[in-house]
Image (cartoon, rainbow over all chains, first blue to last red; front, side):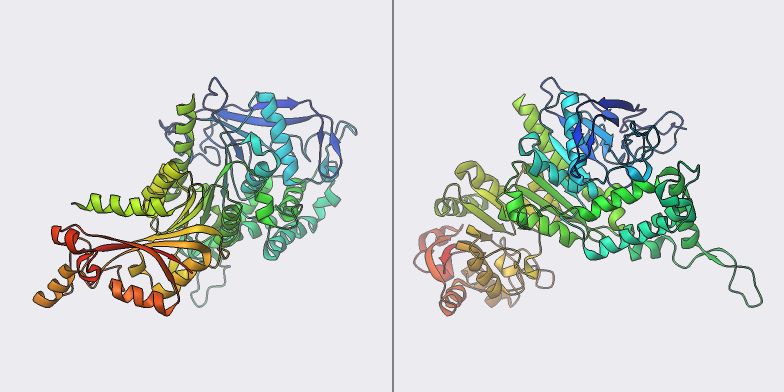
Length: 385
Length: 202
């Protein structure tokens, strides 16, 4: 049912599979002679091709950021912020959203066929870095004939790509919008990712990553991985409000022996179960490692100020008060480094009890900050045209 | 003379003391009007610190760099001498520890510009003396219990603090609206200046 498509929705959307024929040399040295990308676009590219926004997805995201597929009830993952009159205004911007390589929604990755072997890549898919996603996005940009993004924007791992863009291709973006992100993961963050990977690898159906060849899938392991991750994306307060100690089934009455299930258990199990049917275990391992390996200033003497001195664009940094996975402190570090490097930057810490997931969810203040910033970007473009 | 005229006078002083193309940090930058003017007129690289969400929104809408930060929690994230000028307009009286904020301003900037309402102004004195109540004036519009202005001080108090902490007063300018003030503000600022603008260095 798509009956609730409102005037602020981009409406029904279609995905396009784009073949990138330019060889892509990955950071690990492996060359992909060609690769395919699933891409959605919203809005209209202007005559001088200057109004394009690039959306960078996070760990489990896809190209489907906004609008509906025919027959679907749920819109894309960032639909609250993309559409006519929304913060990312499709009346003013041409928005490009892709599924990045190594993910599992149709772009070249562990579930697609390795042309050399004729088999799915599976665990053999080369190790990736955030810069590989940026490089692949640059090839897509070339394919679309865009010379400079009005803004590159992303949350979490998406914010890491937006920062990497600013350092790798300083003249190919005018703005970098970094939301709920970090210049590198903390030990605690890497630890959570390792728990998730271990959960997957411990599932007997994992088959050392070759489960597709064995016609199976480590669904229990992937579900557990997602449940661990999910808890870290929410805040204690929100879980308290949402579930408290409510029971889904059973009772604490004396003399009752039937099993008791808390609402929060049922919720997590449902989320894990659903995710394990939608996502690929090898992709989850690959992308969590990409997160772990990311370190913005590693090649700049570990000095973020030196790293950002290579940027030419303006920045907006946004964090959420209850996000403990990518805490506001991490965003302040980004902001401080940008100021010290003399770059234009604004930073807002949005009050929210929704934890890391807040970057995906409706929030009036977040909408205003993002909307005001992008509106200024659009004003400049339209004034210059 | 009206309030807009006083603001204009204050901004003129600030303009004349800020060097073109310099780095400016505005503490409690409000809606970013001053920074936007300085950017336009002097091509500075400016950043404002602010905690009010609406003000932050307005800065972002203007294209002024604004960073959400509570000044009362310190400014250790800024390196020594990382700015040419640190500005604070009409906010020192709202700080928890004004003397520490002043030290921080002079650590971060090579020079500082600071403005504040003079509690020693005759209107405030008359209000307290005659009515026996804490002054509520055009400049100090709050009641004593809900005011963000938690430290009331006069120019004399401020200059005494500067002497104590070896802070150099490079220049100062007094602003007053009332015709009496305009005649007498430079002669007897502690009584006749409603607002003063101080230009300070270490």
